[in-house]
Length: 485
Ligand code: FAD
Image 1 (cartoon, rainbow, N blue to C red):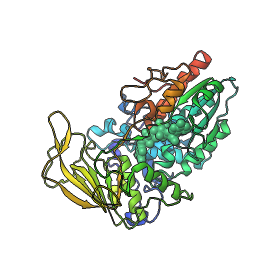
Image 2 (image 1 turned 90 degrees about the vertical axis):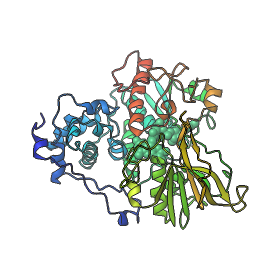
Image 3 (image 1 turned 45 degrees about the vertical axis):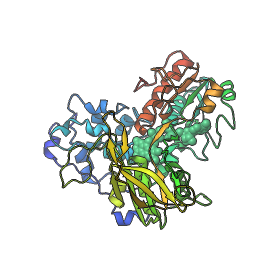
Image 4 (image 1 turned 60 degrees about the vertical axis):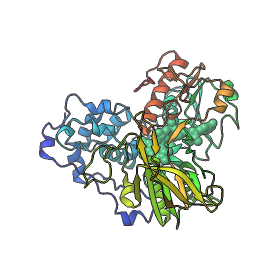
């Protein structure tokens, strides 16, 4: 039972400070300093949770995390029970506790008239403490079912599905075309948000439980989808939404204009100590990032650490800017421009800036990019966003990173070889239970949902696993926190 007066005793919301900007820009380590047990304010902060009776935080979290329960266990210093309750709904709190935008905190009842409980920080402290105390041990299934499952894609959706299915006794192999397991957590999200040791130690647990990993295998090319279908009793597609949204303006083909993921993939590989021949680097360059979301801000933090001469992020927003006072030059609405730790570190931002053309050594016809031609964005009554004529200006750039989001999964081999149906938006079509149009083939994460968040990928991986288990075994006791509808 939580201390019902805890929030009255500790009114301030307190978080561990981020590492100083000038220090963290010199390395790739996590920008956040995380709390360790014994630091008094963590338990006090957990004690601000008032166990409000209708914990909206449960619904705010796609995983249905049992937040008041583990807050109270942390308040009492009961770490073993806390990690049990946290793991009951979330396979990978070390990921969500670090990089989730924490919709749970926006739903916290205390937040109605006080700052919300520091749920995300309590979450990451529980899992860090659990690893440090040796409380995260393999959960090897007591019996094997004899059924086999191929999970294709090793991001958070694939890994969550694989762990659930392995623990249910199925023999699971995870296929990944990259040389390392982890999906966007490995090669998209930079180390300053998520150090890779967190992935590696979880994979160690999964291996000990029996999950098999097949990195460096592209399904559809190295092995066909049909071969996979013949070899396994079920398939989970967790291939992500990897097709970048394009910007069709003159000069797109100039040298020095790249999609963000090409840049981030290489940068993350280099940080991991891999040999990257002729990497795209921001060192000494004037960098312009097109797109103000998570991907754009990860490019910003990366470019600053690589020693860019300047970095400008451009955004246009999904809807017109709301009224804001003179003193607040940037929109506070997150739909318009997200603010992350990278924005504390430097760089300029240009808002309502539509790119009209890339200009190179020979205009927009060739050579290396030298500038972007921008125009002020105008919102038309039908919702379209267009450049306003007469507002054009040029900004210097010798590296341009296009971070405008993703349109959906790569589907050519999937439809040709497996014949799965797609939605009108190009994602893999599924019913409420994550079944695709092909019997025995399921989908989870961004491949079916479209580009989303880690917490949704884990929730969908868990729910898809329950469906696969029911398909193979006739029924399932695995939890299904979300439906696909
Ligand atoms: P992914 O993580 O995309 O994994 C899919 C995997 O499938 C990839 O490794 C791919 O190589 C593999 N694959 C694809 N096709 C094949 C094939 N044919 N054969 C074998 N393997 C294949 N979300 C947050 O919540 N917080 C953040 O801070 C955040 N930051 C982000 C930063 C960036 C730069 C990006 C791009 C996304 C970010 N996201 C963030 C979103 C989040 O990373 C995704 O929603 C999540 O990773 C989706 O998980 P997934 O398992 O569906 O797919």
